[in-house]
Amino acid sequence: MRTESARALPPTIAIDQPITALAPMQDVTNLPFMSVISQFGSPDYFFTEYFRVHVQSRLEKPILESITENKTGRPVFAQMIGEDIHHLKRTTLELLEYPVAGIDLNMGCPAPTVYKKRCGGGLLREPEKVDRILGELRNIIPEIFSVKMRIGFEDQENFETILQLTNKWEIDLLSVHGRTVKEMYRSAVHYDAIRLAVETVNCPVLANGDVTSARRAREILNFTGAAGVMIGRHAIRNPWIFQQIRDYESKGSSEPVPLYRVYDYIRALFDHLKKPWIQERAQVNKMKKFLNFIGQGVDPEGRFIYHARRAQSEDELFSICRRFMLEQENGYFADEPYSGVVARPNCE
Image 1 (cartoon, helix red, strand yellow):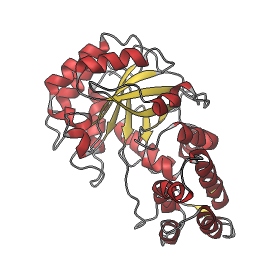
Image 2 (tube, one colour; image 1 turned 90 degrees about the vertical axis):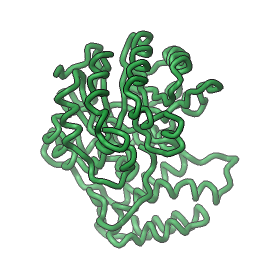
Image 3 (cartoon, helix red, strand yellow; image 1 turned 30 degrees about the horizontal axis):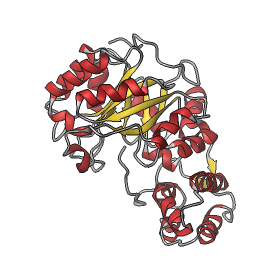
Image 4 (tube, helix red, strand yellow; image 1 turned 180 degrees about the vertical axis):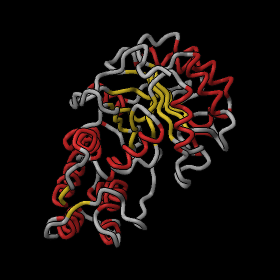
């Protein structure tokens, strides 16, 4: 196994530390979210929401803006999802006209509306097609070509075959979510499968799935031997997690986050996501998909999530936030999600 890509990956924020990446999440990892995350401690790499690729597809402007208008200073990988080789090639060439760090192929999204079209995680049922897609794209991508995948569709039958295909086509970075498509987010993460990927492929591997804290990231890295971690839902909950990982790696510990800083995070998210043409109630409801995750670290009883889910106006929402985050003397955000406080997962 080689530990470096033949085509050098972009430098990390902290030299000689594990790579950290924000996982691509549809309707989450847009330009406003990337901008907010960067205020609290950027990951080394950002990945865009996926560009849908089909016969009529064009580069979606809001996703493209997360590349062209990105002021975070961090590399941005453009992710695609699709199964039509001709149009995947067309889209790749279009994306290469922009300042992308690399092209990423989604072979992991578990949404039924996606895999039923033989896209995302659905490709894991067809190693022969994966072979053709990787080969055709590798031939036109002169720089970094990365793949994000799960460990199988219903089981791991094709996993090792597809890992060997990433070697065959000299993939430069592989992100592995340690569940099958059918397992969605319900099962325990199969970190042994991620370790198998690390032992098999010739490129750096990012471990993805339930990376809940800096301490947990180190445990996963120790077990899998991965080159870094990719974090999705738990970066929505805790945008400090990337800096906490860097602190933990350098000092063996990371500082707890005061609850008043969680208020600042929610305020920044609301302001960045706010659009003049969106009605106030709709804007508040849009925030709730973020608050579902953030609330996992606010209080162990889940009272914040309970009340926040019922807010109807900006004033009501921030009144709830002030009560739980600014009126708590010496309150701190939990490093790990509180047990029993459940969020609704997004496609990661």
